[in-house]
Length: 84
Image (cartoon, rainbow, N blue to C red; front, top):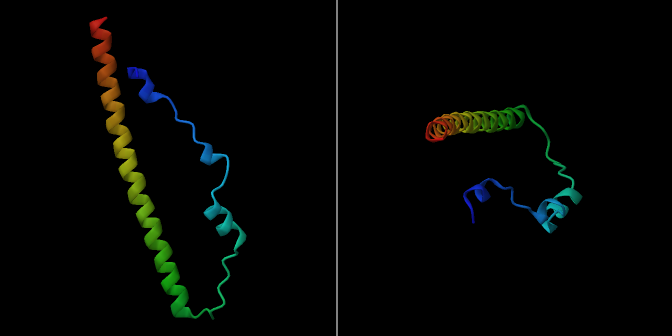
């Protein structure tokens, strides 16, 4: 295994064929028979807002990691350029 092998993409056969669980989820429609009340709707909207906030935090964390990786790669490039 060479140094450049860590940057190669790994092939996944699971991306081509859906798993049995995914097929089962797709075949069952998610229909709720409960009566929608104002309190119920507020609770559901609060849940959606919480999930959205969680996604925003995850995105911010990923952006920070990408910025750090970019800095490291720039430092590696400078070091490699100096040594050649």
